[in-house]
Amino acid sequence: MLIRSRRGWEIPETQVTPEAIVTRRRALLGTAGLAAATIATPAQAGWGLFGGSAPPPPRKPLVAPANPAYQGGRPLTPEADATSYNNFYEFGGSKSVARAAQALPAEPWTIELAGLVARPRKLALEDLLKQVSLQERVYRHRCVEAWAMTVPWVGFPLAELVKLAEPRPEAQYLVFTSLADPATMPGLRQSWYPWPYTEGCTLAEATNDLAFLAVGMYGKVIPPQNGAPVRLTLPWKYGFKSAKSIVRVEFTTRRPVSFWERLQDSEYGFWANVNPDVAHPRWSQARERLLGTDEMVPTRIWNGYGEFVAGLYTNLENERLFV
Ligand SMILES: Nc1nc2c(c(=O)[nH]1)N[C@H]1C(S)=C(S)[C@@H](COP(=O)(O)O)O[C@H]1N2
Ligand SMILES: [Mo]
Image (cartoon, rainbow, N blue to C red; front, top):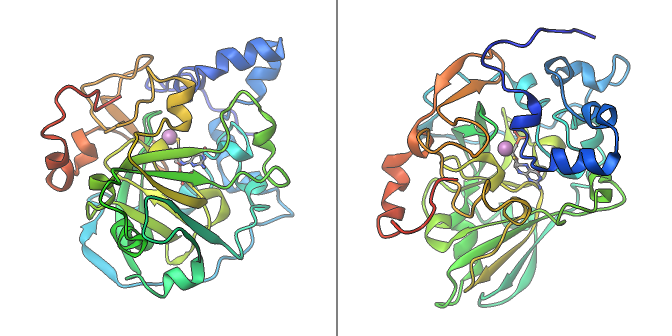
């Protein structure tokens, strides 16, 4: 295994993982050694994690017209990095979950539309895809842990799903639920996490043009580790808001409490909009590390998407919009 010495900018993974939980887990396991074994090293993040004899299965092409309004503004992250350095706690707490995630049962897939909608129902993903405008958008993604990537997603605006759902006038929030399948997801055995993974946003955020549901990346069907077969991308918010492998979208009047918020509200709030000037309680958010090159670049407010979304927040001065 490659051992690389830590560079000055690197924050120990114990500080940076969305884990107050690291401490709690250490207490539970009783030994620091076991806890350390769950922490990813940079060397674990490559294709090597699939093992020399077990290459990742080839992905089917999925090509859609590029939407010129969303070009990323940075060089694309190499596909091998974006698809091998992941956060997907259902498959484990390290970044190297890609191989384990190959077990995700992504086909067939249905999404339940629930709560305050005209007609609560289950939609087959393949039927849904016939009713939306599939397109490619290059988005920057900023994880709360201060790494970032730039990815060509194939998908459709979340607003199109909202329209199909026909929310009732009282609906104000959307709640997204990720698959929780104990048979294939070893992370679910870690019972101190509030499974299933859930996230939420306001109806106004969901119908903003930036909010996107991805079913592909790099011109191919999205791989399991990145949230197959359908995951959210809310690129002006920290990455944990972008729930993977979504099985349910509920419309509600009450603001949901999401997975990370339930674990540690002071560190992972409901809004979680990107802002370099509002530090995470345990580290600075001023800069971010680009997957692939490890270059450090300044973080921008709203992850640089203010022209699209800043207007959503003008009457919310009393809310904790950024952590
Ligand atoms: N269901 C689920 N969705 C999730 C997560 C997760 O652990 N489970 N991690 C989140 C976090 S913290 C980030 S940064 C992104 C990572 O997406 P990627 O693996 O495609 O880079 O997924 C988000 N969505
Ligand atoms: Mo993240």
